[in-house]
Length: 435
Image (tube, rainbow, N blue to C red; front, side):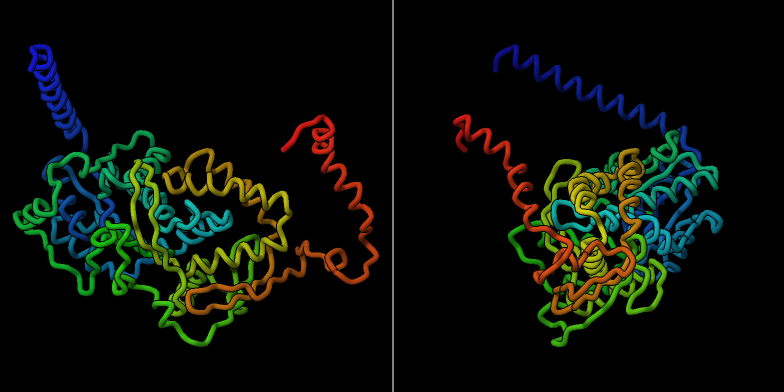
């Protein structure tokens, strides 16, 4: 080894040591600034360890926040677990956000027909800004100066939580333990839990996969899914029946829309979260809404996940159907042009960004006349449109479309229309240009 290379390696090693010391000093200084922190608390192993770690590391009061966004889980044991871990009763917050989640986040997103990378209906992505909003609100209510979450440094959720929090309170401190601690393996987490008396018993029937659930979807990652060539195991799916085992008789439903949102199912008026829950039940029993996807994470890596979104799959099909007869062609095509950008903003955590809010105003404007009914057939994993109608806002005019004799359309107009459309081709051809 040459002297120059040896000196370079020594310099790099010294720099890394000094850099780690600077980071450690910064971390130690930051710890002194935190007086109270609000933790997004699920009651699972990771966030239970984080709860204890925050108190030990920062010597601060910890407030827990647990959101009911339709994950179909009894939240009382989560409250009791927080109490056992030393959290004061007045510092434990559990809120039912199902209606707000569907009304103010899911429905606005579905007005845009938002789909990420052609397939993903953004079930996890759309829940994060609401949780971030509530973390900031509870921090203000309790006098906390920081929030914390259990998202890892490899995933998208850390970005979604933190972008949302900073958009709503630029002065909030964010503590992301997975980017700070040395508990970077399951063995270390379990050892820490055992040392501190944290209950690590698995919940009955709990999936071994890394899961996220809410009223819009369930996601699965990890284990065999880390090999994109490996098919998901049938017993992984927790919500939908296999299309193979779905009923042999199809089910016909009707959804009524008002200003782009579903308001009635089979003639019955439902609140937003009731509508999605009912469609979930219909879709799940008919094997609808399964997805196996390799997606591009915002942090840069490809990730394989599986999703169940039964109600959302039905809503997307129905919404596009009612738009097909009520939305102007130019508006519809502009929406389709903008949709991938809108979906990407949600996926990457920019729900509260000026550009998403601007796009939302445009999308909402487009929905003023998206009113009417859609009839659908559900059968073994498929959603088929049987019919759509809008008595007040349909742009489908039989007088113009009919193949029979009509008195409103002059077919001779097509001659000039086509020649004007082709004029640039004609000029280029006369000039000797060839395709």
